[in-house]
Structures are given as C-alpha cells and as structure tokens.
Length: 110
Image 1 (cartoon, rainbow, N blue to C red):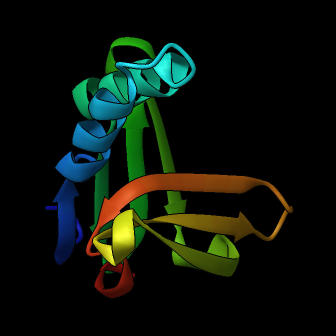
Image 2: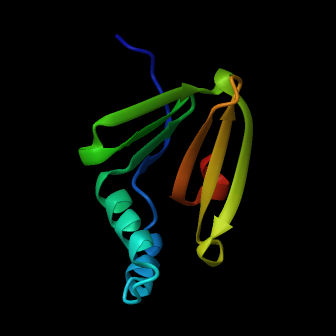
Image 3: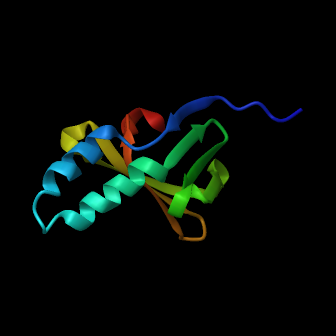
C-alpha cells in the first residue's frame, strides 16, 4: 500500500497558449513558437500533489521529472495570456530550475 496523495492539478498546458500561438503562426516569424506550443499541447503533462510536482514531457512524452517540496528553494509565478494562464519557475536547493509553462490556474495550483 502506497502513500496517499491529494492531487491538486493533473493535465496539460492551457489551451489558450496553443490557440494564440497557432494564430501567431500564420506569420513566418512566430512559426518556431507555434511548433513549440503544439509539442507542449501533445506531450507535456503536469501533476501537482500535496507531496510532489511531476512533469512528463520530452519527445513523445518519455522524460519524467519528479521533485518533492523539500527540494524547492524558491517559486516565481509569471502571468501570460492576460492572466488566464502563466509560467511557474521552481528553483531547487541545488540551484537548478524547473519551468512549468502555460499552467492553467497557475495562481491556485501551488
């Protein structure tokens, strides 16, 4: 029997990030951002519980990163998309960083 965790958020990036980047993708300049948003929408998944933060991503969703809250030194939240979604940068005790991009309800998730 494992340790029970309460899940606060489980899912992918905000759909607004994908829509805005697809609309901007009609210009050649924003095409790399559009490709990045499509890849995030397909393969990136977040899981935030009362014990840890898990990010599954990478090519075909094969990479997974788990951090427990004891490793977190600092969190910075930045609104995007007129405040409907945002980015969260988690700085760990060893000064490495984990970016959570296009998080829906980013103010209430963590």
